[in-house]
Image (cartoon, rainbow, N blue to C red):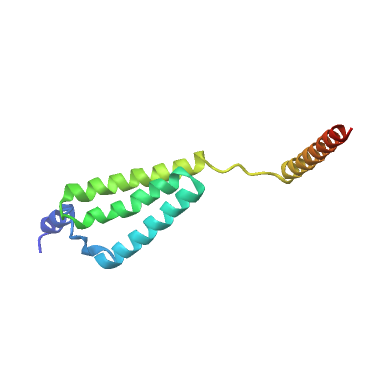
Length: 131
């Protein structure tokens, strides 16, 4: 065997058909639907942008099954990478604020003070009405 032939074979980057995935189309479709439903539900309950991005990115991976085109294969790979990076960036940017124990205690104290003041105000207005 000629070494040049081996080198030429390694340089060929042919895109194989999508059956290279570790699971068939039917399983890919089921997992994509479950992922899309999960992230869509989480988006509607929590309103975090990365959840919407993932709800779009997961079913978009099914596009690979439409054609065996090299352009589609790499284009989809780039699009998926961009969507995943966007989801990661938005999850950091729109992170929910973390409350410390001191903040939680001060908020509880303020709420109890507000209740006491409103109760006192309502009691004063009732006594004024009676008089």
